[in-house]
Length: 456
Ligand SMILES: Cc1ncc(COP(=O)(O)O)c(C=O)c1O
Image (cartoon, rainbow, N blue to C red; front, side, top):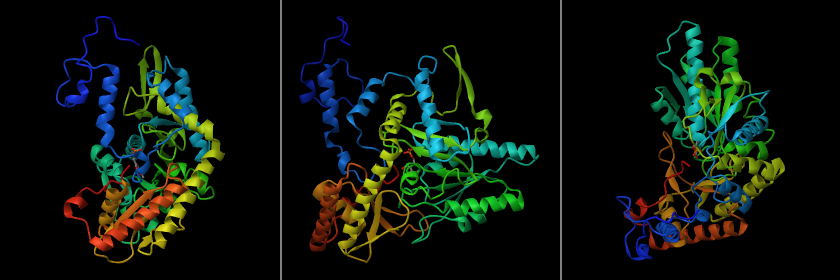
């Protein structure tokens, strides 16, 4: 679309080359489209390179064909089901495909979201509403809901508790124990527990809570004491990995107490940021009064979201990935990533300084590792040195309480970290260690610049 003839004069051509980028008020005069594009691109020139970002779970590469689907649908408001019924149908197909992948016993319901955070908020709200219904039916107090989860969960679970007034009952971790099981959650559960949240593919080390153990305990609690406590699975990363790498492992609706699952389409679902999923075991697991029946542009639609208007592109991109790769393609991709993660783990171990965390256990395609012994330098020094020498974003962080004294490093191995880059990374880690051995630890100010964020 070209600008109308009376469109205001542009700022001087090339103004973006000699003037500072506007950062307080919208500028008076327009730029040409190309100048605006160049200005934005130049602002981003100092950003990290996604290929070297080993901190994020989020997809950093999609095929050109997928990008064309995304680009071609950026102007389609997803919520406008009356005008775009097929887009809504495609979302529903994705919900059904995921329900089938997660072994839902029959017809069910679910929704797309902005990501796992919104999916978790909605899923946990449903737990709260269902708990309240049960309590009211029994004429019991609904004053003090609580939610039980391990310290290995993502920060969004605490966020939910704070935003929606639920007491968080957090099982602390311990040095060397970074997931939770039935014996950990048991002491925290009572009649006010709206649910237990367990993680498949933790943010910190990529492992899974003992979901089978927790489920069995909850089934026993229901059978023996009549206390029906639902289990929600946070499969932000793992829900797209476990079905393909560990198909025999039960973590999903094959387990009786698992009532809802969230997954991030934009992580191992292989779609760019902006898509998550919430899937219920059965329709009745979604509290009916959380569903709004909107009359929008002449059509009544049930909506169950925290947002309203939102893009369609990532929903369509998710469908693209499902039909493009199929189950066989997802399996192959997960296997490739895991193979490269295993190679990286072996190579890092061969450097002779590090301990690999939970090697051989079921886990996401990543390598979590730390120094096996004391040195004059630590994990944070290594992270800085590695970024200074080669620009790798390989985060160093401390574990959640009560393992907060444990320092950790974590490298995500996604599809864009191929074997050749794995070899380069491994050489670079060895080289950074050599530098630190020779010159000693980095300065305090350098340590403060280390990427410590592992929550995405
Ligand atoms: C286990 C887990 N849960 C929830 C989230 C939040 O997911 P999102 O970034 O899709 O909102 C993450 C993000 O990394 C995660 O690892």
